[in-house]
Amino acid sequence: MNQKIVILGAVILFLFALVFTTNAQTANQINFGGPNQEASNPEDDDGAKIVTATSTFSIPNLQANTSGTVSILGSFLVEPGFVAATGSFSNTASLESQLANTPGLFLIEMDPSNIIVNTFPTTLDSAVALKVIVPANLNAVDTNLEPKSFKVAVVTLQFTNSSGTTTLGLFDVFVQRENNLEIQDADAEINGKERQSIDDGDSIENLKPGDVIDIEVEVENNFPEDSNLEIRDVDLELDCDGTDIDVEDESADLGDITEDDSETETIKFDVEEDAEDGNVNCELTVDGTDQNGANFGDKIEFDAEIERKNHDIQIKSADLTPSTLTCDDNSIQLSVSLLNLGTSDEDEVALEVSSKTLGIQQRIVSNLELDEDDSDVEVATLAVDPKKLKLGTYALQLQSFYDNVKVSDSEIVQIENTCDLLSSQEPQPQPGPTQPVVDSLTLEQETVKFSAGGTGSVPVQVTNKESMPVEYSISLDNFEEFAESASMKSVFLNPGQSSTLFLNLKVKKDATEGKYTATVKLMKGNQIVETKSFTADVAGKAKSTSGTRVSLGGEGTSRIFWIIGDIILIVIAVFFIRLIFTTGKKKKDKKMADYEAEEEFKKNF
Image (cartoon, rainbow, N blue to C red; front, side, top):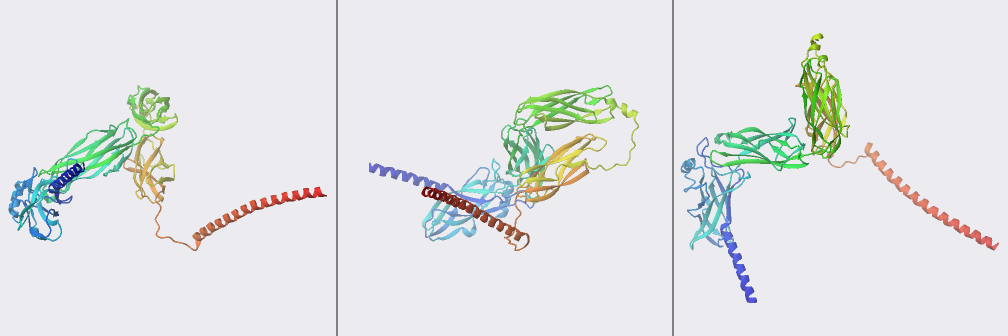
């Protein structure tokens, strides 16, 4: 039995030794270059350009206290796509001639100063230096667009001395070069308004179902100007997980990008109306091939953060029939499509339409039941008299509500009056000097509180004090000191009409605690109508101090004395409380003793 165990153990040891011996001979690897390694180039302005890389490594399996010569076997295996070259690096003209015709030229040789190894004193490994030509057609990235070192050959190293020649083993040769195709910049524009920059690992925040996102991407060819290496057939792709994101065109063709130049392209996606709360992972990729056949590419990953409110009754569309009024019309038909994008089922949805100039103020529906992701179309007939209106365009404001009274969404629809009966009866006003419009912008809060890294809203009211309908744009300005982004909104108002808007602002994560001044800007086209400032009170990272300072006078001293006084009062209070309870107990005991003595006295006398 013991003999069988010994034999089995010997067999296992032999197998282990065989495996490790095989790995020692075949798993050795020599690495050249890196992510910043330039490659050879037959297209260079000055002619075929030879670029070499060196590597120092340790050769195993040498006996101690020996001397001799390490050499490369004359023939070695070369990976497909590369051609082994013979000769010396000193024969530059010959190599340049070969490279011009063969971009995949590969050559490896000993550094001349390291060909002869004189001695190996006490170690089994010894450092040897090699050189290689970095092939012109060497890929910079793999199929996943990851920068990578690629295998170009397998060489055999030999050791020769007076005892003869010994094969040291097979060595895989890997070379890495620089990647010259880069996503230089990427920006996401949400619904044509808010703009966010995207880097690898970033998120596009505050997306909601139905949003439309345009991603503008700048792609750059980083080859130097004199390289004559354009990157051809550059393809841009956007891929997102799941079904909550709908990419309209998943790829865009950027064509050929010349050296030291860039191209910009836009790719679009929509957030589905039934998208769920959560993050959707997306990947933006770009790839192309240079004139020598080498592949290049880049990618960035980002998340699309979809947020659904508890209550969100969206006005998806609104249509007026007719779209223009004539003198024969006496009513218009309004058709409104509603969609519940909130996470709650609603049973008190309401819809209103109003227009001060048209004399319309009407609640179209109340107590409407609308479950999550359900939609409904409401139709109403609105009375109107075009003969009493001037020529022009008129706006109607639509508002949706949940719980019948809480505003959820608002939209503006317009109708044009072509009936000029009133205009022909009244004298036309003569043009005069334009009067400045004031107090069109009202801040509902002069101080708005924010938290570092959070998002807050600035409520503003806009009033059209002009004599004609106006489309205004409202934005935040001068917030860069404490915030990284802010929203911009637009609103169409009839004369005398007002609307309250909320401008969102994203505070920096490292914003210092304190008060800042920012500005709300009201514009009509390219003209600034009015600006107003507000105070942003940021609660966040405390302001830094250098060292600890103890003041012996002024406010600091007063604060210290108050603290000491508070401590003394607490000690005195504790003392008196204990004294009261202790004294009360003694008095009670004394009264009982007196009572007993009195009873004893009565008995005796």
